[in-house]
Image (cartoon, rainbow, N blue to C red; front, side, top):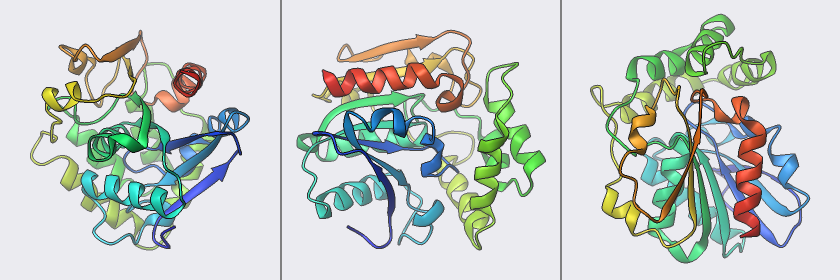
Length: 253
């Protein structure tokens, strides 16, 4: 395994699940989800390159670098086949990994994934990456969530602890600039999505303020869409049980 990329490992089941957080997150975004999967699988929750304990991964920032890094680390661990679950930017990375190494990916569970359309709330993401105190960070997280959903303090505190690491906030500002060139994000072409051969399920909230639900329009027939009425972008917190059920379904399929 790589010294430059970190994963928290739980569980010893016959299947392996890889959890990929979104931009400006870290592995503990899955704090309340990973233990629920551990009884039936070995579960790796990664810090993406440029985040958390993977802060100093060389060349961190672009999604394709992260996809290659995750696949290389899995290979170094001797893991040949995995179920990917990714949120936001982590969803885009999971798709890129599946396109690069389809033989490695047993299924994809994508939670409001990046790259499914050009629209992105670049102002909110940049403020989120640059937030330097708990009040500003909470305000961004609440804005990313559905109206009326208060972000639990433990998630805000966890992110603030990671941002206290020297160089982390500057790296997030850099990555935000890469994700949101101008006011658009890079797209994964629909024909590439149509080429995915593994079971693929997309979960998306209709009240997403970061990546609009309209990006689910014209998804290829090989992708199953699960619409979450009234949910925002922060599905790991807003729709935890639904996310757990979707990943379990993928493991057992």
